[in-house]
Amino acid sequence: MSEPIYRARYWRYFSECEEECDTLDEAVAFLANGWERSELSAVEVVGPDGSVALGGDELQQRMMTLLGA
Image 1 (tube, rainbow, N blue to C red):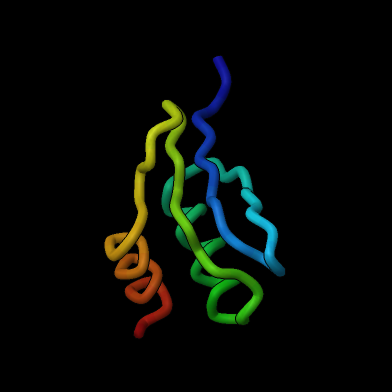
Image 2 (cartoon, one colour):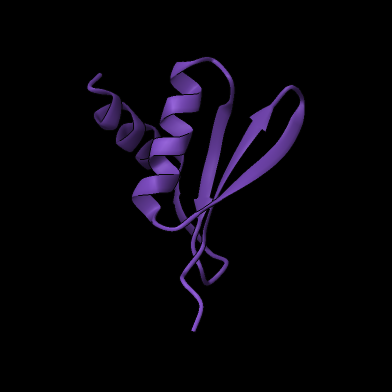
């Protein structure tokens, strides 16, 4: 049985991209760190079932909490 995969979706240089992560927390950390370095703009995290697990204000709030803001 394969591990659940979360997809962190983001914009970078006018292209929509995604990064596969093992957990929701890992996906949020990836987006938060990239945003803090001004390398990307977070869109959403898609869960293993293909539905949006985290997005919008809730995603932004989790990122800010992780960054200590």
